[in-house]
Length: 112
Length: 118
Image (cartoon, rainbow over all chains, first blue to last red):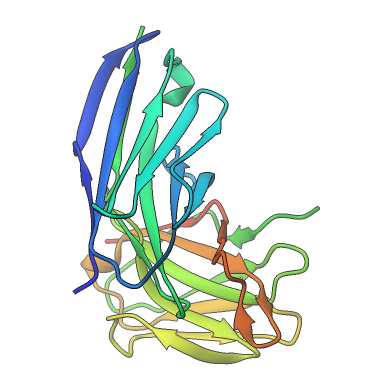
């Protein structure tokens, strides 16, 4: 069964600190992996998309990595800000199909 | 460039009632997908519409139905509401090219409709 699992489930860090969120997937065949940021009560917004051949992709203070061999991805947030408080959702697309699979998300809270 | 718009943003219903949620896709998009997101969970796929037909369906009962109009907008209908239907309902639009969904599968989400069933 194709699955996407994220860890930790929740995380609290102080403003200005860095953090790393993890995503493990079993989706096969793999097409791409996307990280979304979802503010409370709002729709998800795409942060990065990575295909099989890409190892790292950055979007400002957000850097995503992908290891297609171990089927793992991480999202690293540098110099966190209060506005980074949100849920971060890992989404994996199956190659050759329109099916995409969502993780349950990591809820990140930034404390001043 | 108009993004995905959903209405209403919030609504309250009682058990057994019916509800209709509406979605207008991002300009240029022709495919609409609906998701249910319970509090603290990731979105769960309900179904997808393309060319006014339901193309894929997730593990949801027949109480959940939908429709897509010629202008690509879509409705989600839920009958015989249950307490467990309380959730944020998200609409996402994407683009199919020549009958095959855009390779990236990029989804653009609306802000959602928050449904509370009492």
